[in-house]
Length: 156
Image (tube, rainbow, N blue to C red; front, side, top):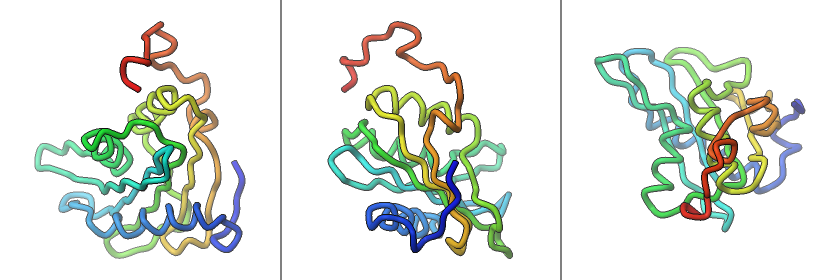
C-alpha cells in the first residue's frame, strides 16, 4: 500500500477518483447516513460509477458492487482500476475508506475475469490522504473462479 496525495496521482487516477466523488453524492443511505462512491475503469477506458443503496431490511448494496453490476448490465466485465471515496452525513472521512469483504471478493473475481491485478485507489473525503494498492494486496490468498477451474472465456 502506497500513501500518496491527490497532486501525485496521474490524470487517469484523478479522473477516476473525481467520478467516484460525484457518485458518492447519489448514495441512498437513510439508515447509516454514510455516503460511498466508486468508479470502475474498463479495459477500454470507460468509467462506470456506483453508490451505496440501503433498504429497511438493513441490506445494502455497496458502491463498488453497484458500479460492477452497472457495468455488467451494459456488457462490460473487464476492468483495470477502481476508486473508492466516502463521507458521513455530518463528517468527512479522515482515513481512506476501503471495500468491505464482500466487495473485495467481487472485485477479485472480476480481476480474475479481466486477467489483471486490479488497481485500487482509496481516498478520504477531501482527497488529502490517498492509498494506492491493488486487489491482491487487499485480498491476499484470494479464491475465485479460476481456482475452481471455471472456464472464464465463456464470460469474456
